[in-house]
Image (tube, rainbow, N blue to C red; front, side):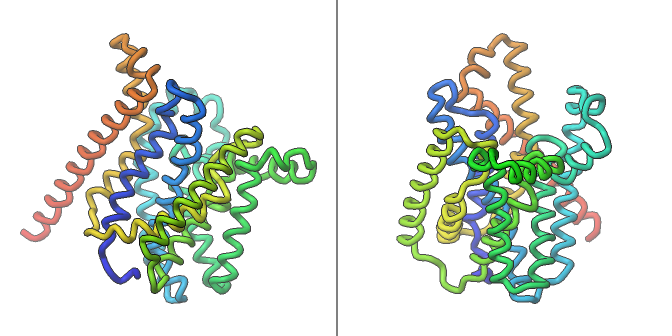
Amino acid sequence: MNQEKQYGGIDSFRVIAALLVVAIHTSPLLSINETADFVFTRIIDRVGVPFFFMATGFFLLPPFLRKEGQSQSVIRLLAKCGKYYGIATLIYLPILFYKGYFQEEASASAVIKDIFFDGTFYHLWYFPAVAMGACLLILLLRRFSSKIVFFLAFGLYGIGLFGDSYYGLVENVPWIKTGYEWLFAFSDYTRNGIFFAPVYLLLGGIIAEQKRPLSKKACVTGLLLTFSLLLAEGLWLHHLSVQRHDSMYIMLIPVMFFLFHWLLLWGGRSNAAWRSASMWIYIIHPLCIILVRGLAKVTNLSWLLVENSLVHYGMVVLVSVIGSLLIVQLTTRKKAKRVSQKSS
């Protein structure tokens, strides 16, 4: 399946996924209905980040699943993650200084923990997670069969589940609670490069290796069924008040399986601009939240731009999209200029 270069569906959904992540951090339905907002931001929108992991796994892992992978592809991924992570960290460094991070939290252990697990800003955990998850999977694939790695990845996800959405079901068991407290000393959440990333990276790679894509009917039917079960799972856990966090659900895995297969059926050419724009939307949207809130305060329009959650979301999306498109345009021009200089 990975031989054809018609991945327009994947690139189109990158932008949608980035906007879903923005919604998680702005709660667009909160001023309308709290339950509706929970369903939208804490259940439905949770497909966004797993999709990014699966897209990476789809293109990275197939050679390693066939025991033919080369180190160069991993090095390229690490370099790309490092570049974006470094730039993003520099963008948010003034905000960290303003918040007093380096006075209050900057012990060596806390900085290391943030860099490698929690992210240097609250949304930047993705970059160390994808790098760590990919390296972990590739090491395992070089040592064990794909089937064993498959079960190991699901086992790690299971451990992560009980440190996330299912935490309240086990926190009263002393030895289990002690184990998770030890884990939380290294990472604030189990949605990280060890427990969260591997299963979605691997799922993307497995889908890429499937010789026969699912039919549209199978994708839509499977997606509707599993999505319904995901909604039921999320609402049930919310009702029980057992969630320490809400990034990890059991039914999120089959939902992502059918969703990704469905996206592959969209066809269309790959779009590099959309890929870049989606990444920059992801990176800069917290900065855009701050800018929108600052504008609201200066103009005395907080009642509209902040308190109206739907308008707030719309404004953050607008600023994020404009900002990302400007960045893409500038970087594209810079690359074109560099190529022109080399050829002349």
